[in-house]
Length: 419
Image (cartoon, rainbow, N blue to C red; front, side, top):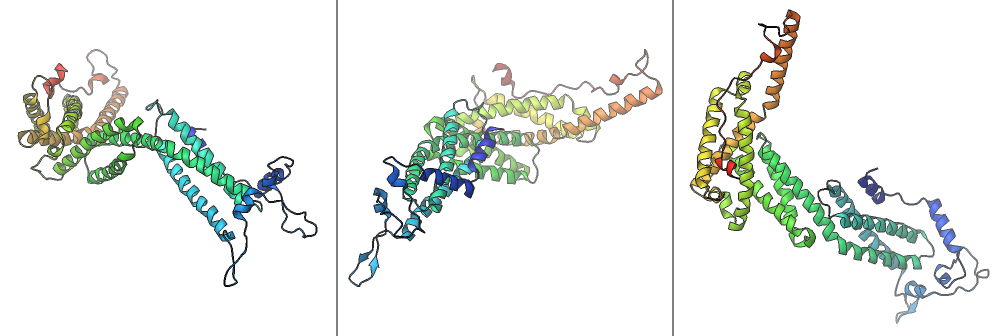
């Protein structure tokens, strides 16, 4: 059984049956002879007054005892009524339900956290498990308090146990939540990386919008980030800002719009410096993907996924982008121009337009490869039936499809060799 199945069982643990509750109460009442007997003394509600010995009063009896008091108008009143005592239980019950709901919601996040990615998160797992166990014990105590006829001590234990639970909860909850936020942000950034290299469709805008909503919710919790995870959380949020901005700009270009103002220009110089790290990786990854596709472009053309003109424009864009990126590189790899208005912004838009076309043709790779395999299989079957098995002078299976030599795709940018 996995860790989270165990957590789920703890959270949704069934309450003891009435029979088990009766056994617990019975065993408790039989335990006599110590100074604690005063808290557990049994007084039967059905006993006759003459058959019942005078009951001793314990300390907690005075806290909850209903003592009539004569008022000026002759009406009897009490300080603590039965209804008020019930309201105390109901108040704790509502708190238990709220905390239980929060822990259940956290369990859903914990399922996505890979401990291998966060080797220092062991204390958060232990704290979470402890909170779940404590809350289940409190739920059982609350249930017995509502059903027992001798509940003064149970009520005290209930309040005391919940206070301890609440103290532990407040001590550990920030770190537990921060770990969940960190894992969720990392997952969202990885999804945006995948989206950046996927074929944009009519649904892509909705995906970007939903992702932004999740990130904003986490960002609003920044004041509650635990110091153990805060640095990593801020780093993930900065990357999320970069990726969201890039994807939204890319989607605008896909929808035929041509924005004149660079959305990155509003960010601080410190953030732009960090953004350069991300854009440089995106450029390198795109360059590698382009070279792979350019070296095998015949199969896309052969099976009708693109034509010569498509690849002509793709090659031209790659060359222009490479030249412009080289121009922005001075000694060290500096790409801050891409985040400013003017020529740098035009270069960024050209790169994103190129990326959209690259993503489209890359999305056809699996289909193109399958077509190649199908053709190879049909030719191989045909050759066997015709008696051709690669003898001298005969056409072999390996020759049935061979990509023609093409001009090797240009790498962009050329700085890659210097890194």
